[in-house]
Image 1 (cartoon, rainbow, N blue to C red):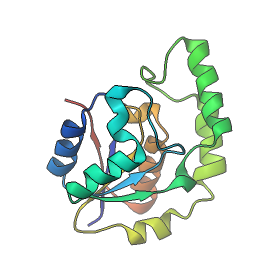
Image 2 (cartoon, rainbow, N blue to C red):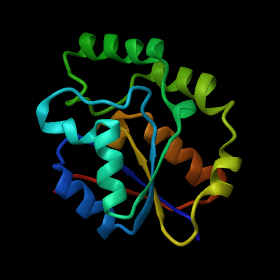
Image 3 (cartoon, rainbow, N blue to C red):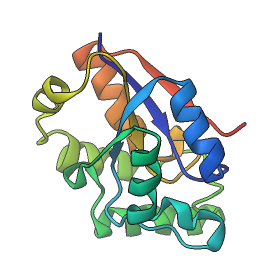
Image 4 (tube, one colour):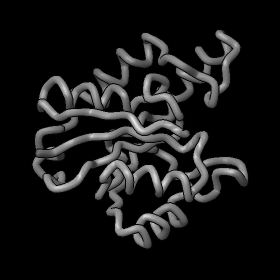
Length: 161
């Protein structure tokens, strides 16, 4: 049976990240970021080329699903709401309602999740990946919820220690 996990960058070292993926039975990581880089030396391991090398060394597959990434305009909408609430991306705990509505309508609804699900491995967990540590603060939670409700896939969350 296909299974889904969600995981972010913040709060992990590369070693802890890979250990959690392996411990969670993850065989494929779906990168849902538009820009596959993370600012700051603490998270340079999560920049695309480095991340892909680390995953390959751990025998974990990688796929970039840019079509599920929020557009720059949507990210800016969320950043404005973060500013209004006085929180940073690393401290956000919830998505703005307007962001949720627009991401769902503009990105998630038109995307063929059924075709994606058909390509997922059934012998291992597939992880939805972005940067935020809390999935509720990230669009990956919206994708995960849709996979759970419409495709019956069990979803778990991998959080930093």
